[in-house]
Each structure stands twice: as C-alpha cells, then as structure tokens.
Image (cartoon, rainbow, N blue to C red; front, side, top):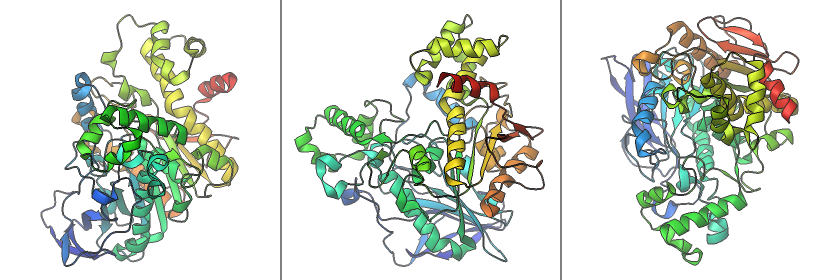
Length: 509
C-alpha cells in the first residue's frame, strides 16, 4: 500500500456494517470489504444478493479472497506466465473461496468536496485474476487527493458463467451472467456507500484492461447496470463477445461429461467441491474463454457491439485503446524460430484471422516489406486480436450514442527480457495506476509517462475528458480525423495512426 510508517486506524460505516481500515500517507485504505452476500453453499450459481449485515467492527486491513481459479497455461509455460505477470504487476492470489464478493477502496483522507470514483475491473480473461494484484493498488492515485479508487473481486470461470437455466430451472436463470451481475452489485454498493469516504456517486468511471475491458463491454449490454456509472473505459479488450446461449449449453454438457455427471443429475453440480469443478474446467475447451458471460436476451440483451449499434446501451463517454504490440505478451521472442518466414507467420495468426491467413499476411507484407517475421506476426495478431476491434467499437459507439469517445495507443517499448522493443499487452497497466515501481525491474518506465497516463484516467473520471495540462491537445475520436493519443516518452496526438492496417481489414470485409 505504502512504505509510510505512520499507519493508524480508520473506520467506515458501510451498509453492511463498520469496517476498520488503515490510514497512511493521507490515504484511507479498506481492503476486502464485502459488497454482497456469500455465493458459496446455497448461493452457488445463483444471482448475487446484497451484503448481509454484521455486528461489531470488521477488519478491512488485508485483501479478501479471490474467486476459485487455476492457471490457464500448460506446465511448460507456468514459469513464463508467472514471470510475465510479475513483469506487468500481477501476482499470486492471496486466498481463494466461493465467498469472494469483496472490494477494495482507497480514498483521500480529507477532501473539500466529493471527488470522482474509478472502479477498476481486473484482467485475466473471465477465469483468472483479482482486484488484489499489485498493479491495481490504488494508494498512489488516491494520495493525490482528487479520486477514490475501487477494485473488485467477483466470481470467475464456471462459478460465474456455467449456463444452467435450461437444466436446473428459473432459480438459476442468471447462471450464465452471474459474474457480470456481481459487478452490478458492486456498483450498487459504490452508489450507496462511496459518498461516506468522499467519493461522488454521480461521477463513477468503470474501466478495465483485457478481460476487465470485456467485462465493461458486457455491462453495456446488461440493462441492470445502467445508471450506475457515468463513463466507461475499455482497455486492450480482445474483441469482447458474449457466448450465445446455445454454445453455453453445449459447454455445460462437456463439463458434465468431464465430471461423469448426466444431464438428469445436473443438480450434483451444486455440491461438488469448487476445487474439483475448477479442475474439470481446465479440460473443457479454452480455460480462459469457454466459460464467459452468456447473452441470454434477458439479463444480457445482446452482443455488446449490437447493443451499442442498436441504441440499447447508455450514452456515457468512452475511453478506449490498446498497446501497440498486444500479442507480444503471448509470443515472446524466445517462441520465434530463427528460420521463421511468412508461411510461419500465417500459421501463427490463423486463430485470429480465419481461413485465409496467407492473404492477410501478404497484404501486411506488401505494406511492410522490410519487417521481420516476428514484427509481421505481432502486427497481424495484434490488429486482428485487439486493435481493429477496438477501432470498430469506438466508431460504432460514437455513431450510435453521440457520446464523446477518446482513443489512445500505448507505444512505450519495454526492455524486459523476451519483450525488448515492444509494447505488450498489459504493460500499460502500472502506468495508468502510477505504480511503475510495482513492475519488474527491467520493465519500469519513465515516471513522467506514468504521471501523464494516470492523470488522464483521473481527469476522465472527473470531467469525461482525459485532457489535462500535462498533455498536448487531445481531441475526441471521430471518423473525420481518428485522433489518437499515442502515449510514449514523448506523447503526441496522431491522426489515424493505424491507417494502413485499418485499410487492409476494410478491404477484406
């Protein structure tokens, strides 16, 4: 939280009861605060409920439990994944439990008037991660005195998104979207409580990176969330899509088969130990995406982009962007063979571009004749995986809602082993939180850039614009200019910086 030694007690009267946190360096921190009732036992696979009040004073000095989860990688990649998470400010979960509806609050000790609130949703796809990662520590942002920071733990994986409505009936109607409804419950808690620590419930900016950005997009298709936030941030979200109910039902059948349970006996899922369920989840499709929010037409009414284009999403300002080399995180230099050529690139990018990767690679090669195979691979995979989807989402959002859209791209190049000369997925997070000291030593960037980026986040929460005096003039994004803030050692606004790639994809549409 902070290295300050003058730590004293501080208390917070929440709707659930009194919590005792820590006051240090001008910041009040309350960690592991319950915002919903337990989702263990009788709460499994059911909709979240408001927090159950407690008696006395509850300690809020340590992070609470994360949702049950397992590493979504093979044994040979575990150490690589751990090193990468540490590099970008991630880390092991402090504990795991089904009873995981807790959040963390960092608030200035003294404010003269209510300040905006940043509610941050963690990354890790829909199956791993928590609001407890070092990268998300809100102390430095709150220490400026002009923002309250909240991070959220919620159900993940099959505990959040196992679609059981057709097997177990109306009582489990929300089972395919519970992880998102958990977040809605957290936002309701924020609306009811955050004013008591100086936050403004009328200025709530909900944002997230990677899977967190996908969760924000899902909120835009979830009507019960409307009115609980006043701006949204979608950062490095890989083409946020909800799972159709039919596909979700098929995944549930696969899970039952893995557990040796018949559809007629699906109620056994209510009593199988959570650790065993998560173990079985690893063998069902892609552990990061097989269990994800389900579009059921009732709770989640449409795909996020369809909800936006159809005028069903709220017209709140949007902050959206990516890193320059998103895919580098998933393909460090050590994974690229010395004799890699365009045929190798086509094989690598096939999962992202469909049935004709050779055509896509040839189009990129024509525009970048001097690029190495690795550079070409990163460009194609990044654009197909994240960047072009973000541009399409931004343009559809602005056109349908009329709300202002602000686009960025993070270009700062790390010198971390295996990622040298790239701006990988996740490498921007510690900059937005002004926590660059939490990143691995070799990946720490310039403090001036962290100040610029974190100040943009706070400015957006305060005024629906990321503009502040430490940046060049930053116009809203529109199809006339496609003005984009390029965050780097020398940050600058560039009109349509992805012009060539965008034109390739438009020509192939």
